[in-house]
Amino acid sequence: MAPTDNEVQIGAQGRVVIPAALRKALKLKPGERLIARKVGESLVVERRETVEKRLWDMFSQIPADVSLADELVSERREEARREIVGDEK
View 1 (spheres, rainbow, N blue to C red):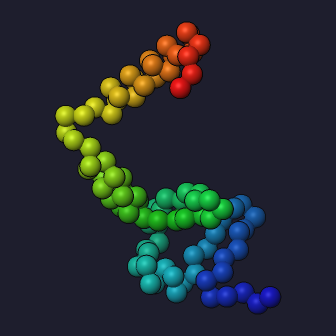
View 2: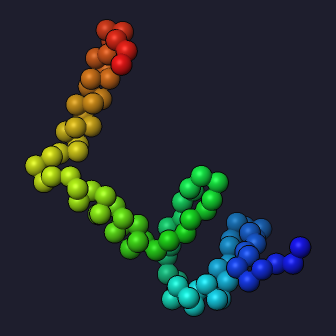
């Protein structure tokens, strides 16, 4: 099977070269840092700014008077209580 224009190969040290056409289309510059993550069985590589925007958008729905830290602590305490008394959800 012949390689395609967008096919990449993993080097001996795990390095991947993004094809020139994709770098140009995405305006990626040398030295630019990207974030890689696993989504299902796929590898997704994106700009840090894209990840940050997605997170800001996701958390912007939370009212300012809500503390996620307090909610997490409360949930953990309730889980610990259930473990001690043997309750199940």
